[in-house]
Amino acid sequence: MITLAGFFAALVVYTLLTTMAVYSMRTYGIGEGLAGFAASSIMIGSITGRLLTGAWENRIGRRRLAILVTLLQIVFCFFYLVPMGLGAFIALRILHGITSGSIQNITASAVIDFIPPARRAEGINVNSLCFVAAIALGPSLGLLIINEWSYTVHYTICIGYAALAAVFILFVRFVPLKPFEAQQAQPRGKAGLWNVFEKSALPLAFMIVLLSICYNTIMTFLETYTLQIGIAWAASVFFIVYSVGVVVSRPLSGRLMDRRGENSIMVPSIIIYIATFVALGLAGVVTGMVVIVLLIVAAVTAAFGFGVILPSGQAVAVKYSETDAISRSISTYYSFFDIGMAVGAFIMGTVASMVGFSNMFFAAILFVLASFIIYWQFHGRRHRAVK
Image (cartoon, rainbow, N blue to C red; front, top):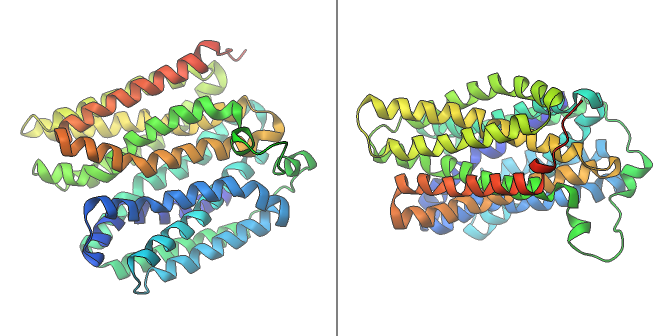
């Protein structure tokens, strides 16, 4: 139930994310840069929601907070149907992000209570399958709905997704917070970075922020890129293949990581993710059926690359956290994921404006290589194999 609640809550976010830039340009007559900010401003709220969830849980309890934020998400989805100015629209996106970030943090933290420690990586991988599936399915669903129907239908369907998340939350039996879990939400000592983020999770967080910048590049620009090379329909095919690949790869990678340790998964997955951007970059310089093959290769390698890295990185962050810091570790990890998703379009869009889309995807390889260096330097080389 908790996994399904997280899935539908995330589906609202990522179904809207790929369509809000175009909506903003059409509705408010603004340029690509401001439209991109209007679309990605939900991630600003998401970061805030994740960071505040621990304190909120301590004040009103995990179950009450989960019900409250899922109901608020329904309310905010209704407001998308109301005509408003650009400032109010961006404010709505940020407020919506606060609820979505809180929901994702609650579900990711609470599910760990039901997973045996010996199978933690596998359990986290299976649970986060729904989150990554929402990231994969959301863009293609959003594009399909607005192309076949309208934004009004789009928003109405998102209200339905949000309502389903609230219904599933009602059936979850949350484990009450233990005293040490409640205590971790309290400020400790002077205000500072380590009181906001969990120190032990930062190496994985720095890795995922670079990788999510690259994935946001795909989410934001793939449709425009495929339109430019004359096969606009291929963008939806990419996300469908990616979704199938994630479903196949996720359970297998979790079991392998539990048995052989994280390096057996993280290192190959990062290398495979490089192939995604090699294929996408080459798709802009070849012709014929080769383009289709390259896009399918890119989708499959993205699934076995980023689709595996995202939940596996969370499992690693949790594995090396103190028991009373698990919730904060998850918050730290996914806050950095949100940061990458928020700034990715702006950074890589600037690159694309200077060198074109094909070279932009080649440039993304540098971010992936940098993430590998961070992972290996601060975690991988110190990895202790599971006995």
